[in-house]
Image (cartoon, rainbow, N blue to C red; front, side, top):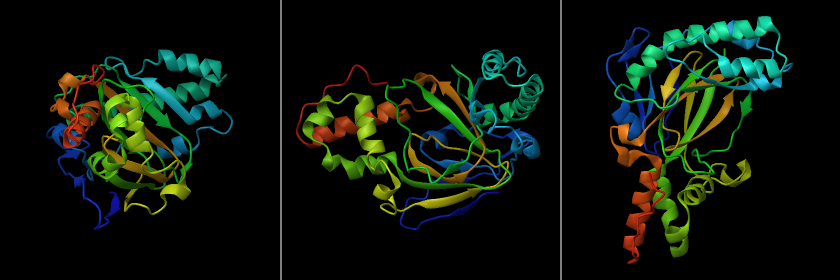
Length: 292
């Protein structure tokens, strides 16, 4: 079970739920997820062979440090694109087969739970990222993209390591909108593309390096134990990996119109902010054609 140190000067958006365990989820958590909660399931432990994952030869084969896999829901043992990647890096057949076997085992155990936690969603793309590399003191950030992503996503994290994965979290995107709004020029609000405006707000709030954001904003600290599982829309809550070696993120895409509340899709959040801020300034609001 995660240990969470909550800062009293920061909004408490953590939710611990006993309604999910290794037998499944008793309900969907899409409402809370879309509202920007960080939801942890203390009774759920991922079925993983930690000793195996601890010995994956990432130093010998650096391309293993970040593996993206598309999941076939009808056949968890199908790894077409991954087979191509393994061949390109000259990965020994035995190592490749062991990796695929352990991945299949994980998919079989977690996917029914994942789909229960995100009950009601329809998935347009099913991607899992295996993050097999050490991360220290990552910069605080909210996820941002150079190009707009028209889809929502359902993101679940699992600690794959034998040691705790230490996260720090900070402002929500609503906090960032409020804090940064006075700094934006009329032209930025009116003319910036959604991608550039999102980067201006979400990324530049915390600066480009640790010396720029260190202790500038309050933060919570969470220690996720081996096998811990949590979900959060990482486009809504600022976060950083303070320490972690191996983790999994399940990043299935969801068409915006299939959300419980499409207004909570990140581009729609941005567009609503832009509209409100322009109208506060007495300026004309024109809806962008590239909003979600």
